[in-house]
Image (cartoon, rainbow, N blue to C red; front, side, top):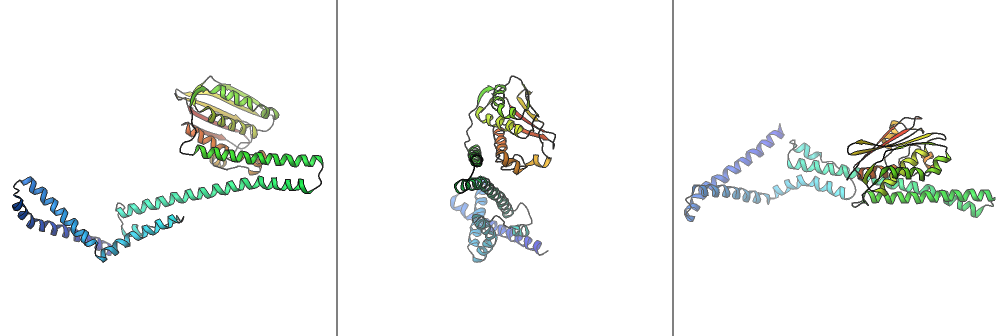
Length: 353
């Protein structure tokens, strides 16, 4: 009730001020018309309106200089200023409910500004959380191989070891060094792809030939596990960045080989989906994954089984890079999988020019 009376008083005061301004103009305007010899009804109406607005603005400006109005203005602006100062210091947990309580109308300018600042703080808070998680994950991924390298190097220097033990330790150091190198390479690649000007040079080429080449380049890996490669590639030409798409197919096919047990089957199929799209299906008889895992596999550093990924040298960045490259090509990637029943990756790409 008090709030309603307060608002009503403000509206009445505003209307009263308008009434006084135009009343004053009513007495001032005839004198002005006489001095300037203005007889046009149209011009008199324009001058009446202009004088009323000018007088109203002049009074409002004068009132704003009074201490009472300055303090009231400062009262409304202070929470916003304090919120922005907190955000500048890295604190995005702000509360501007003051404006919602003060101005029930959602369309009030102060209310809209407060909602915009709150939304901006929430977005910046999420970005800061992602940044901290990214740094934490990178630190963890780097620390693990460094600890192994340091430990085995110390053992090689300190202990009397047999030739076989020395060879084993050196192989571990080599593998961990390669993990570090791969992690660094993937981080640089992801940063490059997410920059304002990512490397993107498209051309027209044969997608079936590219897939066949990638499959053959992985032949030692799938032959070592005695995997059967069921390949069906229709002759298909697309317009894309061939180097970037190389990384997509290498990563996806390598993952299928890595997570498919010995004597399994990997199927690679290329066909036309619609008049303007091609579809690539990579299906395996591997370990599969749960629905929960499928929801996260494209997140940076996500590993469904960290110990398995560590054994195979994975960093959890490969599928993030794959998704980013496909999005750059205006394509889509879908995953269908069940535990112990294999995984099917479906990539849809526009044919392009």
